[in-house]
Amino acid sequence: MDMDTLMQQAKELQDKVAAAQDLLAKTSVKGLAGAGDCIVEMSGKYDLLNLTINPAILTRGAADVAEIIKTAFNDAKAKADTTIDRIMGEATAGMPMPE
Figure (cartoon, helix red, strand yellow):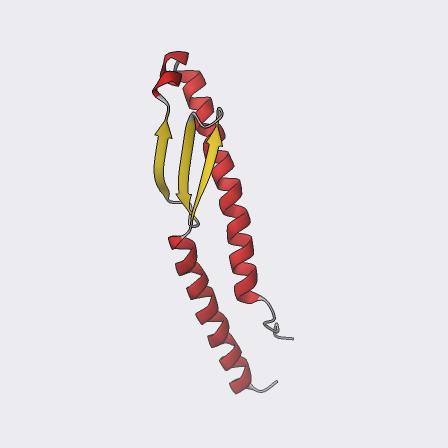
């Protein structure tokens, strides 16, 4: 493989990854806990976009509320991880790796 071909492939990969990162910044996922009592919305870059808490759970005590929020966050993060894997996988699919 000559250097020009390698450089062109690197540029194509760089462009596809940049586009994928832009898409991830615009993508949102929602994590739920407590049958929807807490909803964490985050971008595909793990930025917190919104946090919704049902006021009824606030009477449960700080530790329970914190646990519900953590559960919703972890659900959102798992969904973001799956989305990131899919989008970045599509961006790099079929790109030959240098030998």
